[in-house]
Length: 64
Length: 154
Image: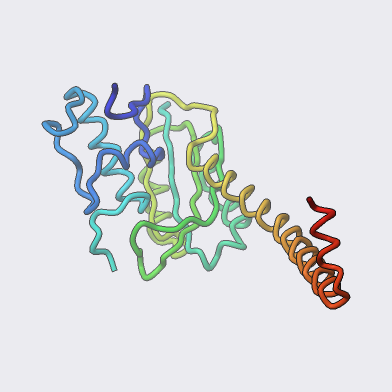
């Protein structure tokens, strides 16, 4: 069974996919925990950071 | 010629004037010899955190083609436009003609909202029906006909 749903192309707009890879506090889950390939982990990280900048995902749960 | 994806978050208070803004921005793009391939008006959306004390933002997505040296000019124009609370111009490999996930999500939410609005009056009708039934039962009780009703239902 696959742990995560991985799309063909990672997209910063697809927040449902990216939400699998952040913790409740908004941190990016490390590769040793996610277990996905290094190449995919880089893509995930990059798209999460873009999504955060555009206020689609939170940086933290401490936002006012 | 490169492919670009531009996301603009517009002040939600100016959400009603988005049409004018879009015309203005598209003129700016065409002046800088950018070709707009697709425009998506995603609409107002909850921000994950507040930007300049705004909790909502009106998202616009442009997929366009143009020369990289003209990007700087557009960036400066965007910077001094107070209607835009955040922007990002991304270079992308391919321009997909499909609707983005954000737009489909927004449309789904809109449909849901209209459905709920349609269902609301139905519920009221149901309530009225229930009330009528209760009234009938009460009348039956008063008339001592409850036993008969029970026998019918049996």
